[in-house]
Image (cartoon, rainbow, N blue to C red; front, side, top):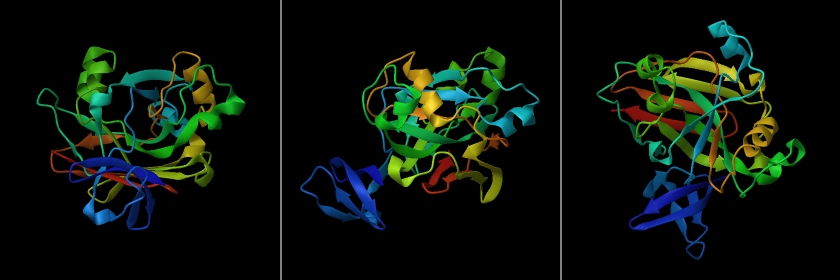
Length: 243
């Protein structure tokens, strides 16, 4: 797996092997993971998010399964990494967690067919689609509620396509150690290749762009001081504090 790190004034991508990180940019220098700041593993031009993409989440809400993916965009200014702090906006009275599997794009692409989808994917990581639920309800559309700075925690690292099964892995969200979301990505309505084909038919995907693939049931409220974790089997755990 690989990630993006800061050591003093240097920011670099590195390969993670246990507690050791090997820089991919600075003459393969090795660092102890504990000596590095873990940054968001991708620097996207956009984050394309999918709404209502789990069968069990649709059932929870009493909604019909959509005929095609429901899309919205988060800005890159919302991105934070592992252990970054989610800032609770003063304007909101209700902020929720949404644990998600994220696809990281590895090649600039457009109009990718289903059978070629994995050719353009760099790998997979964890994502939290933090949402100001009261503003989402008030506005009737999702841009403001989803777009606050710090509302797109992602990481900690990216697992390459060859090392992850995007059809069967548990996805769990914990708040202060308590499990609040618990499902499997096999419950997704539209799978990874379908999403790549659908989204790339609309817009060009750039290297580093993120596709957040939707959340399972159990989304719920966060409060200042909470520790929220998104854990995906085979990837790891993304941890953030609400401040």
